[in-house]
Length: 160
Image 1 (cartoon, rainbow, N blue to C red):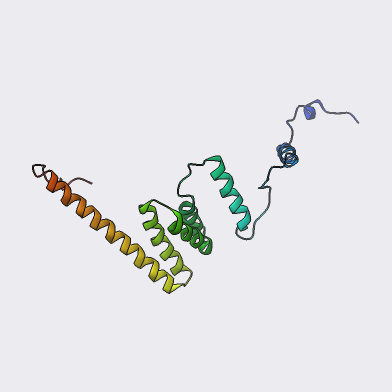
Image 2: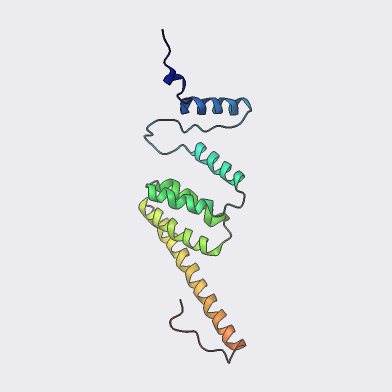
């Protein structure tokens, strides 16, 4: 059979290239998560999500608020149980008070969507408590500033 010249000039099939790269990485002992073709009928299994998070944190150790952002993404996808798991981790482990405050709000919203009403009320109460505490601290800081700078003009009403 005669070979067509144009056929030999075609580039390698992209899936063959990726399959070869995956095989080489597996031979080196690397963990591979294959995002090959398919039509998923459910949420990504937890062990895969955990591996992706672990890999992202290894790649970018300074990645902050991972669980909060993943919780928001899961909420937007309608995966409320997974979102609640992420927000629960945030309120236990994050160190940024603003993120923690927002996580309590998102957790309350997620619990409500899951029909976990007592937990939703408790989360919203914690959110409100943190918000009120932040307002008190801001008011106290303003009062301290005014006491230390009695000649300073009052803040402009047009300031953000």
